[in-house]
Image (cartoon, rainbow, N blue to C red):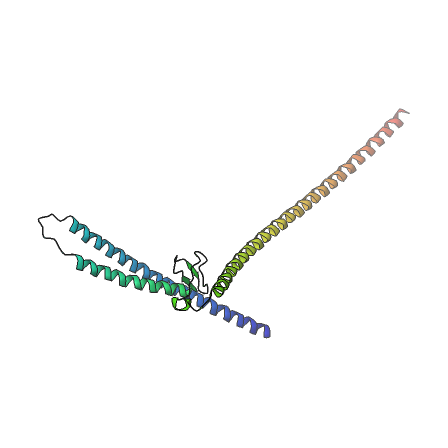
Length: 222
């Protein structure tokens, strides 16, 4: 009974973990779709701005020049608003994966990193930068480096384990093939021995018959 209780608890925990991951993936997908739609809107605004500027450029000297400055500022303001919304959605996506974006090179990094593994830039808020001394900064950077190295070592160990398993499987397969080959050879040898014994028996029997015929012929002569 205790075994089934533990099995039920493990199944429940596994279901919760799976449901949580599935929920995060679904939410991230929705966010990405919305970002894609907003980026399309930004591109449309870019095209509209370029069109207005070019149309103003090709106006002939005799035509009245249209003041497009106000119109361009309105379009640029729309782009700023949409860009802020895209940035907010991106942060939500990163939050779902426990990631954040480097403030300097914009590479995705783990949330707990205080220094970017890619460019080395500090990731703390500006208000907290003056509170830490140089030794603390070095220590934190070393911790981040150790975490990164630890992950690399784990990946190498996993690859090594996988390679070892493949080699073991190959070796076992070769042994199996060798055993099967030996069994087949032994069977063939046994069959050959049986055939040889069978042939020897009949040869011996024929030899006896020939001897008897020779004796009969000798008797007839006498």
